Image (cartoon, rainbow, N blue to C red; front, side):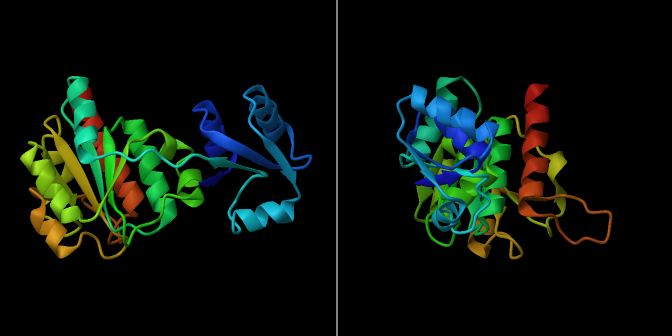
Length: 240
């Protein structure tokens, strides 16, 4: 997989997951430091011109650096749940229902990493691929967060329920406020696609639907912003 951008490549180097580093000639001190680190780790380095890197990243904002990394480790729902159990905590999970914008997916992954979630569950189809754009938007967090890719989100919610995890879907039409729910218990937040929100069947499978109150003229929040608000309400409760 190709990742690009200073933060995404830097995180990949920290995790020693880089198979090859690709950089623009004379790109500056930050890129130069990464090249030095790659050579210390005996990672092959390829120097290219800017146009070549533009083609490789398909016009992404690469900041003159990219890296070929090993495929992301694939997790199962059971492994995500086990991570919480092993640490003696109530599971704290994010479920993405058909979010197709890679920048939103990357931003949610970054926020989920900051919030300390045990993992993310996503559907393979009708979702943003976990490629360079997601890696850059996540500032490299995609290499750290456990991600399980499933065939069917509704079935995944049933599996979580069987494991004793409460599923809470964010829905702009919900009557219950997001901050009126106890998130110290095993919880999975479910976030829907941009514009359309949760699919009907997925919403029906959630144990609860909650909304974020809006005071201005905007009818809704960007899904990554909404995710940040909800996840850090759970963090606040769990810290208490």
